[in-house]
Image (cartoon, rainbow, N blue to C red; front, side):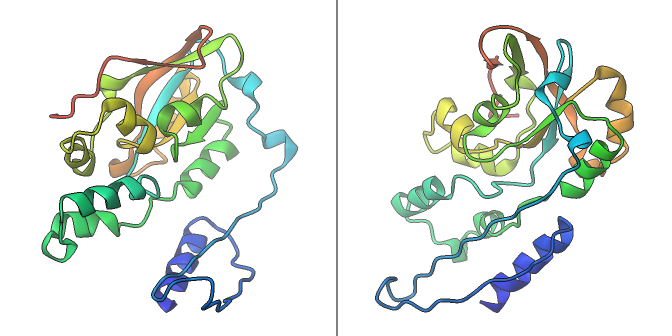
Length: 226
């Protein structure tokens, strides 16, 4: 429990949030022995003038990918299923052990700097549902996010997952596949934006905004052997 709280406090500090409360309820008749449930939420306030409105997104805007640092918080049910059917002992597999306990990269500080400088037309955190389900929420009518899958830079953990007979469709819907966050920007701002990121998380172009009926179009294929 102490380790969990330390992790939550660290996450709050990184994202400039205040940890304002919580409770520990012991319900032995509800949970199995050795099992627990943890839940939380965050609430924030934004100045109306700083709201990222869909109207800001225009044709020919660039779509940038900010690299993830791993699985983040999505796809663990499928990962656990693979570990079970392949009978993998995590204590003996250092690579998977390190990957599966890696804390999610938090992008708050970088994104706040960009919004304060009015450098963003739109953005999306790539969580459950992958690139498609998270991007389509912010794309205006009659415009389409054209994504070039061959531009995506993979991490080793996603190559390992793909080797376990998971389809491309399932990979892209369940995992971030190396894209932790997407930015939609005016092309003239790309150099200004890059200076706010460390080398490890430097954004790179994976697509652009075009006219179209579909909110998101995926073009090409991810090279799982890159």
